[in-house]
Length: 126
View 1: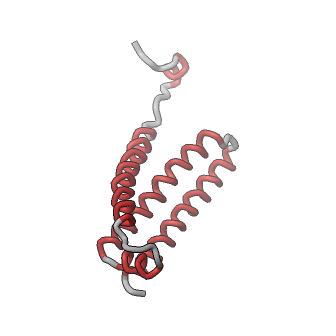
View 2: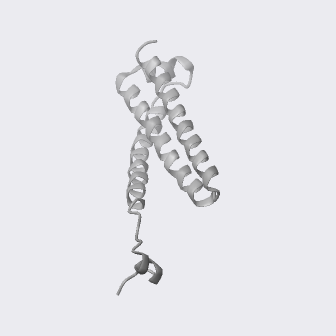
View 3: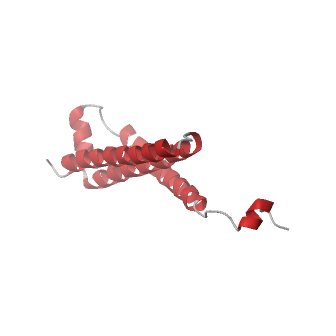
């Protein structure tokens, strides 16, 4: 017994075998975000005050610099994966779909790069 449609059997078409990798990437980035998010919330709760100097000192600590950078890169990647699914599911014009996917990727990379630059600038004492 086959789960393929009759047309699929005749044409020899099957799964693109791409959805599983996307699904796993989204789940793994969600788990990383959960762990990094717990660290971030716990760290913020442990700060003495919520002023600029305290936040700058927090970001300047080496471990916090690395973990904040990972948080923002992972957040941007996870967001991109989610937006990609929405675009692929709801944008039906082929040219518009490709253009929107390209703009979305550039926007997510730009946001991640700006965030990492800002964190590293503070973290490295700039």
